[in-house]
Length: 583
Image 1 (spheres, rainbow, N blue to C red):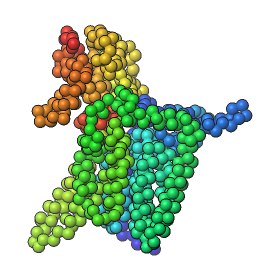
Image 2: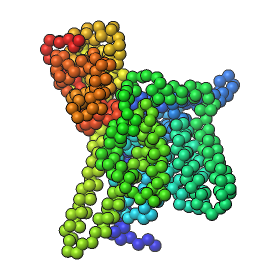
Image 3: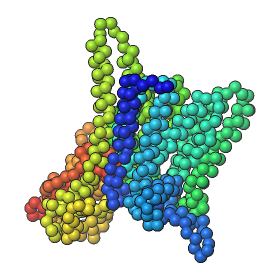
Image 4: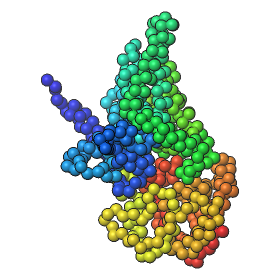
């Protein structure tokens, strides 16, 4: 018989509350932005999911076209998983015969991300328990709070992309590798093969994940009391078996990578050329003249993790016990992925997603060490001093989770593009001539279904990217500026990649030679575009800013994709006086 007392009820209530908050932060407003495709990767995956079908044509079964997504930037595993979720949603709605809609496909992919993020929280705690051996309820609670309010976890769980799933699978691989490291058996090899196969079936570049279990298996066998030649033989057999079964699971869960090998290779070659900078596209311009590693350390980690976790994670990486094999495996798992990935020309935040939970683990371990040291303080007649230390620690925890609280605001409110559109419909007169910018995933104004949509705005989505190279565009812009009543700057995508403006301010300082050098290069490379934004932001162009919409996070200086998909800053300028030509 289980004895129930007030303490047990209180603990159960606290954990129920924690789990509820975890679920809330991952699922709140999961339909944000819909029915509009706010994230290009999510849009591509949703479109691929919509194409999944297996029909018999002319009494022939064609395996090449059976559940072929015709999209190979990612593997088929998340698409097939999303298809199953859509099937269940349709089953309960009673519309199994209806084609899969874009909204259904998107929601199913976001459900995968949200659920993966929740499971990942549990895996992170398991990793911490493996390392610390024992962790109290209080320290577990603190750990969960830090995990729950991690900005990266909140954002990626709301994107129907592969990041959340890959974070889960890499965390699981690290956890299972740690289990092998401290055991005398290799019974986890099958589970490692499944997790690794699912990772590469999600994204083929995740093959780098396999390095971690291979090292763990080698270390495990090395520590066994066997003769050297037997160790080598056993190591080769086990690692070959692991890689072989991982490859088999990849084929099983992403079969069209091999059935349609030519299409797969062609797609991967293109994606690789873009990522390596061999093919120049507008959405990689932000990486021009950026330094590998330094870019991730300054433009990705501080915003995805929040500055407090980033700082403590860094301290944990360097300060935690260097004799602990499990912590060293965690360091290795971070470095083996971070260093080669950081050297790639394209440095999107999503490329760093798999190791963000690892940095969080370093931060939690370091913070738990602080708590343990405080708990061991015993100073006679100094209870007040000890109380102050404990109080300061909990204030620290609250400070650490503030970035997560702030980031949650994005999904607790209407998307800023809906907010801006509502303002536009209410404040900008009919028949207004509007100059906007191209290459944003959705052009404003848009309708959310409740506001009265006016269809008689003349909105020009202008290609500013090629302005300096194309005299025809320069002539067109001069004409558009003469006619424009309003100018929209729908995100930071163009001005932040071609000038040194952030938050409408020029980022040139006398003591930052790196920034100054890049600013001079950009001015020389894009003189007309720099002149345009100089004059627009300063008011010399004859337009005054009349509205700005943002999530209030002040993170436009982060890597571009961190902000532009779910919380771009939108600026609206109104013609205030006679136009002054900018060139």
